[in-house]
Picture 1 (cartoon, rainbow, N blue to C red):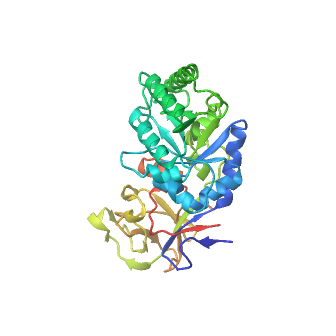
Picture 2 (picture 1 turned 45 degrees about the horizontal axis):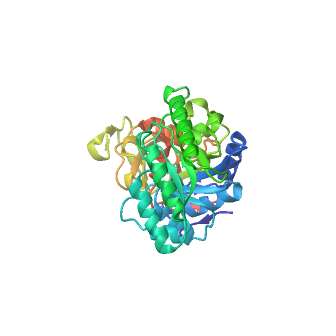
Picture 3 (picture 1 turned 90 degrees about the vertical axis):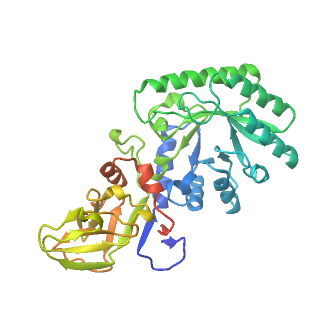
Length: 380
């Protein structure tokens, strides 16, 4: 049974999301980290797959927690009735921390100013906020540096003693877990272990304090990084976190398709699309596919990426435009309304998101998260 998230309107394209594949992938990842809790990252609209349907699916499949980058993503989950623990980790000054506190969102803090802002909201709400303290172990993004970590811990303990926060997590993030054997992995684990020791000696103790650093790649390859919880993202949606090591038994959840909007017969030497970057070599048939870079089809797919139509693969022919691109289908019997599959699981010979990523020199994360709001998600 399928159901479209935007009603039953006929649209020129759709992203079909197989929720059973997501359930399968959670089970695969659970087998890699059987002793750890699992948080699933549903940021960026669940990597383009749909925030609320995917959040519900992973919780039903056995994940215990959700993670979002932004507060609004977490608030949207609460508004949809999702009651599971949610951690949100990117917070800028002036954001609605009061709303997050009222909704019971767990918050990350890697700087004293943010601890103070969280504490102020907690006092207004007259309820403690569950906080995960973040240390930068080597990715040089969010989190306190190793030199600033002791003062952050001390400040957090002082605020906790006032009853404004409860320290429930100590965490970090890998820079190169998707590059097996990279020397930064061992260095980051060593820094993380030292940070945990500093926190413990300062008084951050208890089994309720979750230690977590493992992402999807670390979940499947670095059991020593699992600690109390793993945070899985791209792998939950069936895309390999380390493509050169295979698919780890994961099943891609998204199939992106469109319906041919027009076919036309043209002569040899016809220039196609902006800049005439593609010119037909023989008399041939062109088919118009109503998806473009406004929908997330990368402009770099021009003359590179493949699609499947009429049972055969064809390469994008000419410049990808805002709302459309063309394919040269030769003498194949293609007609208006025929399905064109840009990428899917690959089981029927169609291109995969990994192949699209390889063709334009990027990662699968970018391929799926860029699919725009004009493309309805349809769930099975």
